[in-house]
Image (tube, helix red, strand yellow):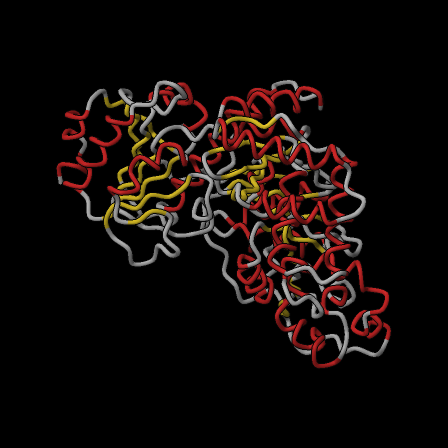
Length: 505
C-alpha cells in the first residue's frame, strides 16, 4: 500500500484513492506515468496527492492555457501548497508597449532596464502571506516596487509553478506534470494573411543587410499566392534567412518603425520557422511538427488519451480510469476526402438536422466549412455561450479544446486530416527523426485526437447526451482507436437518421 490520502479536509471521490496509490507507487519506482481519466473526474487533485506523498516539490505543471492554472492552484491550495501561475514575457514585460514585441524589447534593453536591475534589490515574496499568486499580481507588484515581474517568477519560493508548455524553465524541478498531454503530439499551426507579405518585404528592403535571396523567397510566395492560391510552398527559409529577419526586426525596433509593421514582421518570422508552409486561400499557414520531449520523471494527464500514444513514449506506465462511453454514428455516404468531397450531401445533412435540433455544433476544416458560411447562424463566433442554431467551428480552432459547448447535436463534418501535401512533409520529417510509424504520427494520431477534442466540448459532463455524428465514411477504419470513448454504429443514408432515437424524440 502506497499510503493514505494526504489532503486533509478533502474527501476523495470514488476511485481517487486507488489511482493516488498507483501513482504514488509508480513515482517511488521512478516510472514515466500517464493518468488517463475523464474530464471532471479529479485528475488534478489526485496528482497533487501523489506529489505530496512522494514529496516531489518543487513541481512544474505545464498547461496549454494559463486559464487552467487557476483551477490547478485552487486544488493545490486545498492541500496547503503554494502555487505561482507564471506567464511569458509578452504578458509580463513592463517596458514593451505592444505585448507582441515583448521578447525583442526585453532582449534588447534588459541590461539597461531599471526593472531588471531591481531584481537584485530587496523584493517581497508575495507567497509569504498567501497560497496562490498569479502573473497579474506579480506584474502589479513589479510596477509598484520597481522590479522585473517576468524574472521574479523564477525567484519566489513555491511548491508548484504552473506555466505554458513553451515558456522557459527558470529553475530546477523535481518532477514535471503535463496537463492535457495529448496536445504534445499535435502539430502547431501559425496563420497569417497573405497581405502581410507586402509589409514584410518593405521592412526587409529597408534593412541594409538583407540578402537578395531572402527577399526573392518572399516574392516567390507572393507570386504563388496570386497564381495558384493553394498548396505547399517550396520556398522554405533556412537559418541564415531567419537570422537576417530577426536582425531586421531588432533594427526596425531601434529605428522606430511603426508597431503594427513590427508585429507583422514578427508573426512572419514565426511562420518562417515552420518546416512546412502551406497556402490556403488568403492565408499562409505554417505547420510545426510536434516536439513531445519532457524530462523525467513526469506525469502526463489527459482526458482524451488514445492507446497508440503509449508506443511513442516508451517504458510508460498508464493509470487509467475508464471514460464514459457514448453512442456515435458514422455516416458512411459522405466524406471530406480530398478530391471526393460530398459537399451537396453535407448541405442536405445540415438542412435536415435543423429540423430536429435547437442547437447544432459543427466542427470541420476551413475548406469544407466555407461552403456553408452563408447558410449557418454563426461561423467562428467570438463567444459560444448562450448561442442557438447552427454553429460552425474550425476543427483546429480556438474552440476545439478547453471550452464547454453544451448542445443537442455535435457533427464532425469530415475527418479532420491535414492536407495530403502537409501530411507527406510531416511524414518525411518524422521518418528522418527515426520514428517507426511516421504516417501514423503525421496523419492518424492528429486526426483522432482532434476528433475527440471536438466531441469533448459537448460532453464535458457525465449527463451530457448530445447526438454525435461522425460525418465521414473513413471513421469506420478507426473503430478500435475510438472504441475507448465511443460506441460506433454505421448509418447508410440520410433517411436512416429518422431511426436514431435522438432524432425521433
